[in-house]
Image (cartoon, rainbow, N blue to C red; front, side, top):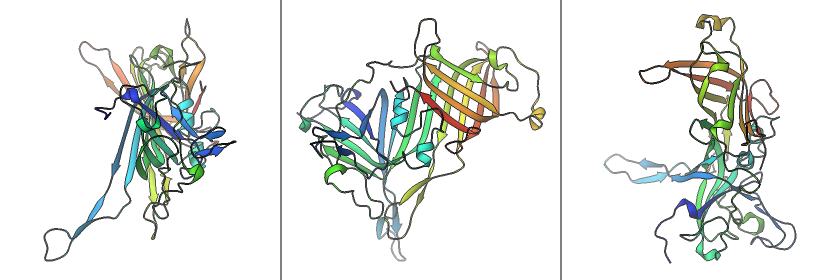
Length: 375
């Protein structure tokens, strides 16, 4: 029966966790091979608590013109087409960030695996089951399903946010080289391409993929982090508000991972997409004001203090103070701006913006780190 519509109920999102997008996604650990049979190790992992998954393609063409003719001779694809996907999900632990390729051990910078290429280029998949059925726990025939694949995907931005009245979230944007659609979800050819010639990677054996069964991701864990279980602490007082007296209303941590495509003659696709340095992480905090401290902006020249900022998300527990689920550790941040707003009927607020540079994997002075549990 044809579908009349597709809603979130019928979809699940996955990412390949291998070191490269063109590498194996199925490893035979016994019998079974490209179909994901018994003993096969599947590197595709499901992303949990997805709130939105948006994908697109873009094809840029260049006009070829000549004297004596108003219309163009042809519109030619001079640059390789691109695919993109953006994902937004509720935070309950560090599992999603970990399988997306970020370091979540709290000791190395969050982008360590991306810097070393151990966890950079990946494939992303959106699986859809029959209309009216939940994707989680679905066991319908493979012929009732279809899959969208984004090949050679590179994360270009990471954001973590939380605010009063809302659950904490993370979001990522990914830019890829190819978008492919499939009937079914088992033993399908990888969406990745070979940048050297633009052809799809080998469709034999372990380069194929199989979508695992979707699960809830809540069993043994929690479903989300509430605003009452979030604390934001700064190591030093800022100009104006007393840090310990600020009634923080929201935070937004953004880590841009912009890419520069590297091209060469003879290759229709960019053979690599390298990170643009320096990478500056931005933390925006909005708070209601209480007490103020003495100070003036001229003093910053002589005492431009760096901040250590910790954002701690805890599991719910009676009386508060539950176990840490996720922690964002920002070191070497400096206050870039602050603005105050006040109007009739509203509490006076301050908006603070801090920036730090993302250092190397072992840089403890200037970095952003993530630590947390995986369940």
